[in-house]
Image (cartoon, rainbow, N blue to C red; front, side, top):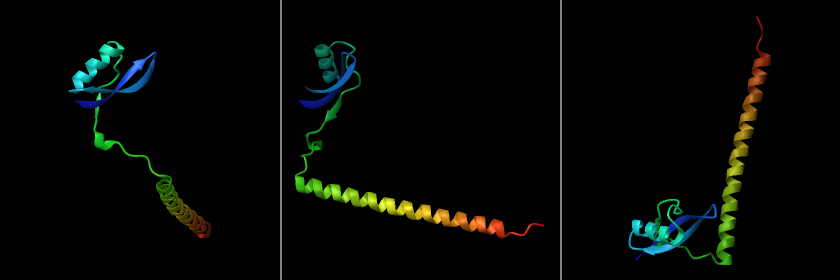
Length: 103
């Protein structure tokens, strides 16, 4: 049997549930039998057992948070340098336009 993620509609809300079935069609039929015809919102999607990840340990979570914080800081520095270069180019352009003699 395979594991399928099936989105269903209950009281107007969409809720995801897991159904064990042999195929996608079988999972849809089980969902409609259990929750009513027309309440299966989308096609069920297969879930592989390898795709689930274990939660990070606190030290691993800290390292990951620090790495993402460093990446955001690098992006902010790059954006600031680009902004300053643009401002400098605009100043030079305005100086060149002011210094241009009119005929």
